Length: 289
Image 1 (cartoon, one colour):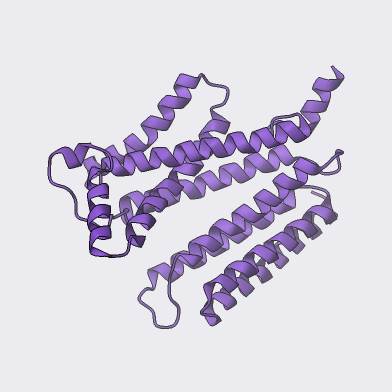
Image 2 (spheres, one colour):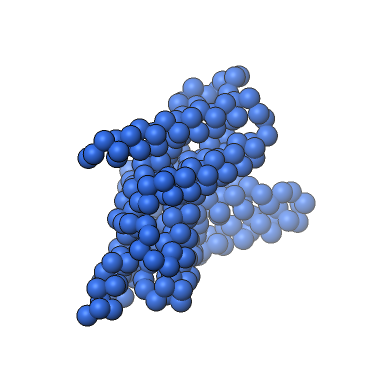
C-alpha cells in the first residue's frame, strides 16, 4: 500500500467518522427522526460521489460503507441495551440508519457502474462481492436476534392445535376480519407481516446471485429449506415462535428478492449487455476473443 492510498484511506475514515457523529447528534437532539434519515441519505451520497471521483476506485466506498454500518450498528446496540433511558430512546429509525449506511453507497456505485461508458472506475465486481458478503454477515446477526432473541410476535395469540395451526394465514385472516369488524387499527398486523417479508428479500436476492451456477432444483430447495430450518430451530429450542404464517411470509419475501435480482440484472443486460455480477474487464476479454 503506497503513501497516497494510506492518505486516502485516512481521509475516508475521518470523513465517515464526522458523518457518523453528525448522525448521532441529529438523532439525539432532533425529535423528528426523518431529519436524521434525510441527513444520512444526503451525506452518504455526497461522500460516495467524492470518494469515487477522487480515487477512481470503488474500494474506498466499501471502506466508507463498512465503517458507517459498524459504527451505527454499535450505536444502535448500545442504545438498545441501556433502555429504558430518559435521555435517548431506541426506535426503528436506528435500523433504518444502519440499512441506509450500507444501501446508499451500494446503490450509488451500482448506478455508476451501470452508466459508466468506459473503464474509468476499477474493481466494481470486487466491490459488489465485498459489500454483499459484509451485508450477509450483518444479515445473519439480524436473523439470530429477530428469530431467537426478540422473535416476531403477531398481534394475536398463538392458535390452538387444529386447522389454524397448519393452514397458512387462517389465524391471521380471522384476526384481520375481527379487527376490521370492530374498527381497530390494522397497523400492528401489517408491520408484523412486513418485518418477516423484509427478512426474506435479502435471502432471495443473494441466493439467486451465489447459487446462479447451480441447478434450478437446488436453488428452489434452498429457498424452501432455509425458512423451514429457522422455524424448526425455533420449535426445537423453544426460542422464538414457530408458525406456518411466518414460513409463508418469509417465502413471499424470497420471491420479492428474486424478482429484484432479475429486475436489476435485466437493467444491466439491456444497458451494458452484461450480467451485473460479471467484471467489466472479463466482458471485454470475451468480446476480444
